[in-house]
Length: 358
Image (cartoon, rainbow, N blue to C red):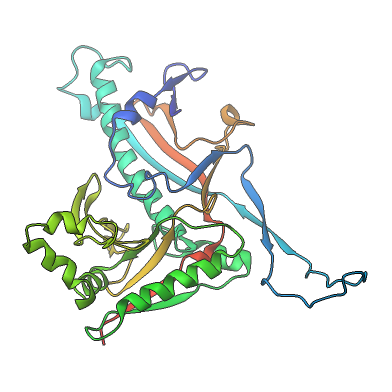
């Protein structure tokens, strides 16, 4: 629930959930996709255990009646503790902005003031959504980055004592690109270890990398079938299990997709603008990384309580909106904030991919 402190009576709050629900922010490709398991907690830190079961090693044959047996290696575990990070934006509703617009005397209960509050809240929601999407998208790569300057806020590789794995997809016209993709699938399976089967392996690619893969001769036959009477049907056959790098318009922009085997190759449709107006892409033109679906708890967000008396000992929420009340007899400030811990529980599953064409 999103609420603001009532500017007239500070002992009460105004629920802004209906307003936030009708606002459709421009960002949220992964933050709003259901990829992350979300949970509100009552602390401002989160701890979990990383268990290393080691490698599966075979043992020797023993006597049927003997008592000797080879002992398994002891399981190694490590506790990982992370603190919350904070997103907070503030906007203002000024009496000056309502002069000539409001009918009658200025009132915090007037429709004009409420409309201006929703307008400010909409701007705050869009900024907050961009910040959160950036945090969660970088979290799927193992390191949560600060939206302002790209500095590391949460480093799961350092926290878990692991290193980022790398892979190369060779997309030169004469290369066996399917072999590269099969090798990547085996690599993910090995990294997943004892944690069960994986679902779809999503590979987020830069435009150059995506074009190199979908235009490779190994997949050209799929496209040629589109010119036959069975073109579209052929592309949908499970046996072929491929599609033509379809461009889809989503709420968050145009996203191109290509399916092959258990892989979903995609482009990332959103661009980010830092505070200094620098444009940022989350993936370089010839690069990519893996997002592994179907592994329970791999991507998580913990929402921590805000540091206020009114939220003490309460589970954190996605967003909290508050108002200062009337300031200097001229305006009210509205703050939208969240205190969260976004993380990838096993960051080694985020494989850094380079696509080459030579």
